[in-house]
Length: 241
Image 1 (cartoon, one colour):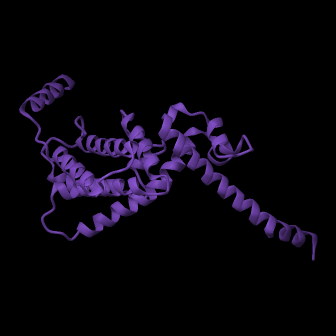
Image 2 (cartoon, rainbow, N blue to C red):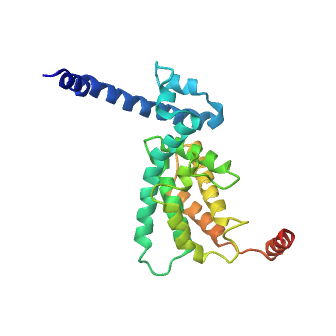
Image 3 (cartoon, helix red, strand yellow):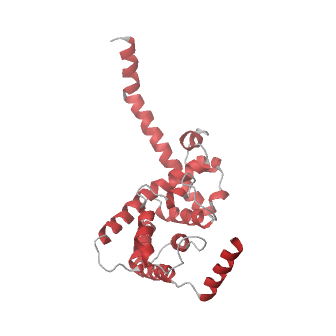
């Protein structure tokens, strides 16, 4: 065996496999620890050092190695869960694609059900819902896909874009787009409410909670723009002209 071949063999044998497994395990443990602590104390209430200790990582640079910084960790945490949420939402959209008589309640169901499924998950779902609610609630501007909350709004299947395009036509005239941004307000409400319920914890009547939340979301999507709101919009447009 040549020296080069011997070197290759030494890096592809059991030791390298063990290192790879340890690296993967450390990453998952750090995300799990972050889920618990962020949900308990808020995103800004936990230090990176605390997360490293909670994940039983002796290497104090493990978190930086795997994620870079707090935002990198949050992105990885969001992506872990949004993969499942997006797949569920896309499947619901596929199922109704050929349906006749779309309704806003159907749209509310597509938005709500994939989130509620996380409440009873055993993969940190309830913690994620609380974190997602916090991320969405503190967003007061156009969402950058590169920031942590971007993974919630711009998931890998573009399921929220599909949802918006499918049900926008059923919403009252003038309620979509700037400056009201009704769809984002509804998305924010749904995430905050599911996150609130996840924080309360069990027991939970999942069917009743889900149906009630769908009713509320459908009501928000279909709320008419009042005469007073329309007047104030007109005033704003005149002042901007």
